[in-house]
Image 1: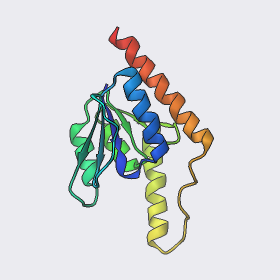
Image 2 (image 1 turned 60 degrees about the vertical axis):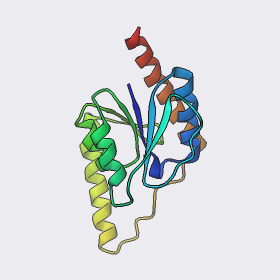
Image 3 (image 1 turned 180 degrees about the horizontal axis):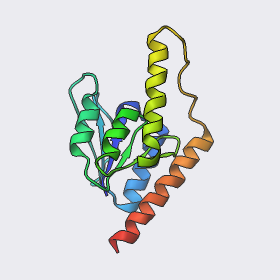
Image 4 (image 1 turned 90 degrees about the vertical axis):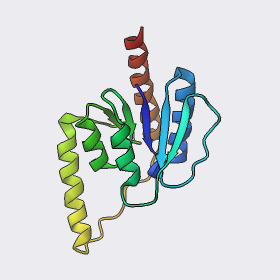
Length: 152
């Protein structure tokens, strides 16, 4: 399993959780962004900076993603694309996005986009809470523990 992170929109606290988990479990992780990133020195963690542009980081993640990889993103269209490739997707709130729920999430996202495009203020996403961070960390630990069992 390789962890690919949509780092343009990833909260710092979530990155910190990911850095510690990658080191602890010796899991390769790549952060992809269209701006420079500071990452800890590690043989398990690397970064890729893509050119600026709409969905440039998403396109690189899709190109790199292999079946069984874990993708960290809140981007629903990106999640849909990599779920279709056989990847696991975990959002920053600790929710798994899978074949069973991605179509519904994509439909809701598209509906909200239509509302915003027609001038209706839909507000933004809710703040990331301590409960969300804990849920993310717990789900990440479960996924990495499953990876360790499979490798044995």
